[in-house]
Length: 262
Length: 262
Image 1 (tube, rainbow over the protein chains, first blue to last red):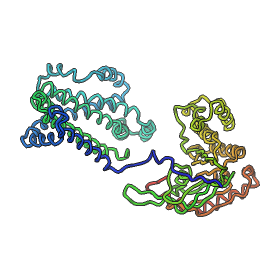
Image 2 (cartoon, one colour; image 1 turned 120 degrees about the vertical axis):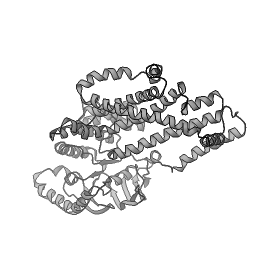
Image 3 (cartoon, helix red, strand yellow; image 1 turned 90 degrees about the vertical axis):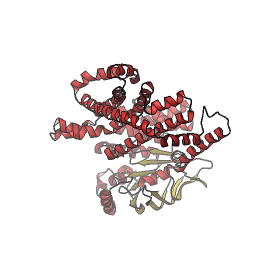
């Protein structure tokens, strides 16, 4: 009598590993990096060791250099991000729900969208001066497009049944927009905000490298010119942390705003 | 060939770390050419049991195995999924061919076998259609053809008709009776529809919930092909009444549950 025991064929697809495995991979990478630098395989001018970078960072924090740069950068990115996303949200919402505004606005948005925003910086400097306004504007513009585009398609893809329900209860257009269309589009809007977060960081650094005395971007460029690599890398780490915090904040806001989306 | 489910228990660990028993001490045998229906309220673990039998999930304890197999034969299981699980990018023909491709059946033989089953389930003329062009009933016909074209030792069906409307469902049930008489595949059929179980199965296995335990097994002593006939109407109704009486308390409890887990 031949027997065949049934085994779980999904096992290899559903295997999970504990979180510490991820932590371990980072730690191992850092250790290898440190060892390579300690062994003198690479000159510290090209690749400073992790501990070297860390002590440079500590010195820069203690000297107040990081705080000053970070303050300047945060001011620009927060103002630009808020401005760009609010306007983007409004434009996306109205182009998505009004056929007329859609017809008028869409070709303009679609024509401007593919332009690499940093190419407009010289123009903005010409128009708005070399101060904060041109940098905030370029960030706002970079944030505006992904937010507007995502809001637009989020609004366009709202389940028509939900709108029918609202209309069947004689909800006004404004109420339907605010209480049905907007919440239904929120997952897409947040996807746009996350895209925009990356763009805003990129534009911040680019603008600061082109035309700024202060800010993380200017700081990195400065130490690059002086070939002080560990301080340059410390600036990069600050940027990486800034991006990380930015993402976490957005994630937190998203979980608060759309609990039904898990 | 026999399917032997031997003392199978399954529990899941929830996010909060609690152990949730889903199945407890299940002992069940499906004989050669037997049609067994598993019936129970939602949350009784009937789909879990089916998944364990399909080799898609490992039991916490106990085992499922095939016995009385011909020497050297590796058993095959055909599964009909609730939401069909058709590949949207594959035509009707190519969807049915998938299992044969996995088995390495030569092209020409594939063609012969597929056209036989396409004919048998009533899909002639739809070979080139994509799933999204088909009605729900037609889609599940593809699902059934895909499962039986591999000539499985065991056919598993997980609420295959629950997404269909009542009329289509009745038609599909009748067709399944005809189809089953032609193929006589050993079948394990999961449903929460009592009438469906009584119309289709040789034996109806009732599961209680939280944790799922076999609470009763009924032999339906009417030949399958005659169950539609008026002289059996009362007997069928009596079976349905007995089963409903048995599981209605559990079904009501399931209704009040916050998080359905099936």
